[in-house]
Length: 387
Image (cartoon, rainbow, N blue to C red):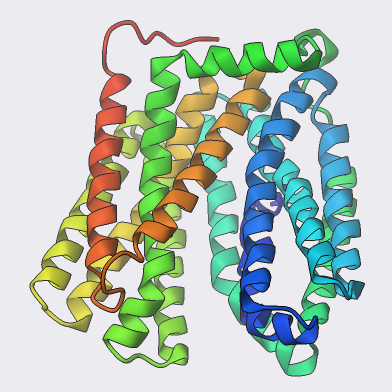
């Protein structure tokens, strides 16, 4: 449960903050563009922080970097709540993302230290189930906070959550990487670890296939508000209901994936998740290009989005299992790929007429097609397991 909560730093940093974004610019006498930069800075911190914390934990162990990262998140969240200067808030949000990234990347590495194969995939699925509630609850909680407070109150709540996680991490998470298994220090050791995982076609195949399915989901997150509200006229309240329904689909698919792992290999479940995402993307294209109406679009979204819960946990388990001695670096590359692909997919769905949703469907189809190509790398000769 603690690892699952740590893996939810992304939605906590981003989704809880979204309802308060319009009020930020006037409160700090700035512009809407600058307010948007506070979001972009946090995403950049979440991405780059994994590149630092993951390899670092291979050298010094998991527990200390994890505690430092969560503590940094807590302190910076409190600082965000009292800042009165927009450029400073942008910098603080970047640092906040770096702190949160430690929980995400080291949490995966801890699982890779302790488990392999189906057991690791099962734990990744359990973490994903806990994490799946964060995108559902975070915007709702953020909106309710604004009923009794301001955007500063959101950061106070984030600081309190961070403090609780610092205590929980200290009490629950022990060191999982013994000294004799730690890697060489310095930039050379980090570069060598990154080079090892990037040269492994099997690792890249599993990583990119899972992360591209997630990128299709991020395209939905970015494009669905325009399609459903501007295109189909849904109110913000009904849009939230639809958004929550897809989040519930992720949780249910996660439960199904954990159950299937008792009987089916992780690679088979990954392929099933990729196939489900492809079916959802095709149905979405048919629905938006054929002007079939709201309900077929919602059904296609549900199929495509819930597939992430079947694809991403086994992809992470299979990728990290190939490089357990440098699980921190392997986890960092996995996280970087996920966030970079998500950042690339989000603006692409804004091309063309956003209220029609055609770009969302095309981006989803491309993501799934490329994911299938990467997954094929894992079935070629010359991609042995690297331990």
